[in-house]
Amino acid sequence: MSVLDARALNRALLARQLLLRRHEMTAVEAIEHLVGLQAQEPQEPYVGLWSRLAAFDPKELVELLESRRAVRTLLMRRTLHLVTARDCLALRPVHQPVLVGRMWSTLRRRLPGVDLDELAEAGRPLFEPEPRLLSEVGRALADRWPGTTARDLGDALSSLVPLVQVPPRGLWGQRGQARHTTIESWLGSPPGAESPAAVDALVLRYLAAYGPAASADIRAWSGLSGLRESVQRLRPELRTFRDERGRELLDVPDGPLPEPETPAPPRFLPAFDNAVLAYDDRSRIIDAAHRGLSVAGARFVLVDGRVAGTWMTTVDGGPTLRITLLVPVAGPDRDALVAEGERLLGLFDTGEGRPRVEVVTG
Image (cartoon, rainbow, N blue to C red):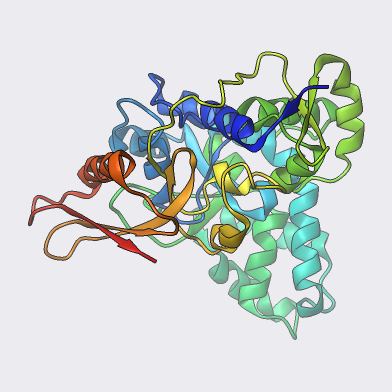
C-alpha cells in the first residue's frame, strides 16, 4: 500500500479545496463541490469563495441567498454552513439525529421536564408565518416549561426543527439579526429522508473534496457516528493509502494527487474554513503548535500550502490588511503574500483612503 507523506497530502488537499489555483466555476458549483462552507460568521464565505474562484463577485453569492438557491443552516458538527438549496434538503436529514444528540448533551440539564417532541411540535408553527429570532420563540414558549430560559429553548429548537437563517443576515456588507424560518417554508419543500445511501454519498463527496483521509477524519468533519458500515459498503470502490503514521487513508478513485513539489501560491482563508477544520489529524496543513487557533476563529494565511500566519482587516481611514506571521516568511514568498493581500483588499475597498498591507511577526 502506497504511503503518502504530509506534503503529498497537503497538495492533494489544496487541489481538492480549489486552493492550488483559482478555478473557472460558478459559486454554486464551488459550494456543492466543497459540501458547503462554514458560515458561523456571516461574511466569511465570501472570502472563502474569493480565494478559490477566478472571477468571484460577492454579488453572485448575494443573489443566490436572496433567490433562495443557497441557504445557511446547521449541519456538520452542529455548526452553520452555507449550502445550496439542493444540498440543504439532502444533507439536513443525514445530520438531524446528530444535531439533536449534540444539542441534548449540552442542554439536557438546563431543560428540566422538557419533552423534545413536544417542544418541536410547539415551536415549529411559530417559525412558519414569518422568520423569527430563536429567543423570541423561546420567550413565547417559556411559560410552558418553568425552570427553563428562552435562550435555551431557542437553542434547542435550532436543532429540533430544520431551520434556515434568512437574509439580510449573510449578505455582503450588510448586517441583520439571526432570524429563522423552517426549511420547508423557505424552500417550498421539506427535507428528504435519512438513508444509508445518503450517508454513503456524503462520504464519497467528503473524500472528493478533502481526501485521501482516514475514517477518523471523516468523523471529525461530519460529526456522524456509525460510519464504519458506510465505509465497508463503499470499500470495493475506494482506493487506499497509508500516511506516515500508518493510518489507512481512503480515497475516491479519481481524486487528484498532484506532485508534492507542485508550487502552491499564498492564499487567505476565512474563519473556520473547513480546509483546516475538516480533519482529525490536521498536520497536512497546520503545525500542532497552532492547531488551537483553528477553533478560535482565526483567519489563516497559507504560504507554500501551510498555515503561516493570521490576518484581519480594518476599514477606518481606508482598508488595511494586517498579516501576523506565525513562521518566518521572506523573499519571493513574502512578496507574493503581500501581492495576494493587496488583491484581497479589493473586496473591502470602500473608496476612502489608500488600501495598505501590514506584515508583522507574532
